[in-house]
Image (cartoon, helix red, strand yellow):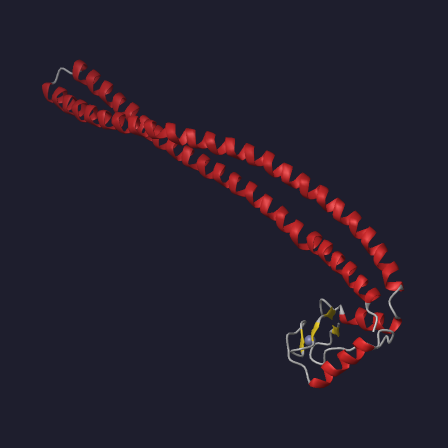
Length: 237
Ligand SMILES: [Zn+2]
């Protein structure tokens, strides 16, 4: 049996399947991957920003506490100086001492918080720089993907037109069977391992009658009748 025209059609259909897969699966996957990269970079900036704000608030809290304690100290000093009463002056002085200790603690804590602020700021700068880099890289990737998509779409139109021509050369009985089979099986025409009696599409051992039919078809190349696999329905070559 002559399968040349059918095989040429199957080959072209293989190309169409590859292009369609690229269009529907591979390119969208590359696009999502690129967008995920950008999302990660943006999330890192957001995290660094929040950490930076938290460090800043921490510093401001200690700094406010320090200012407040300094105010208490000044007030106590004034009260002690203005008061003629020794007992009131003594209370004011002990208030001053307590506020002075608290101010020293707040000052130390503010200094520590301030030291923590610098690395957080640096981390934020780095995250922003990385985000800018990723934005450029991802934009390039998206441009490339868009360009490839256009090429694949054009190629598909060309290949599909060629496919229509190739289909015309296939004997109608073969074409009808092939067109129906390709909706569920791929590839449709597969090699039959004569010695083992195995269909290479489903890898199942076939009855001896199938091997006989294939061997008979080998001897009658002009007969358009096909031998098909009883298990998977594929055309056996
Ligand atoms: Zn099979």
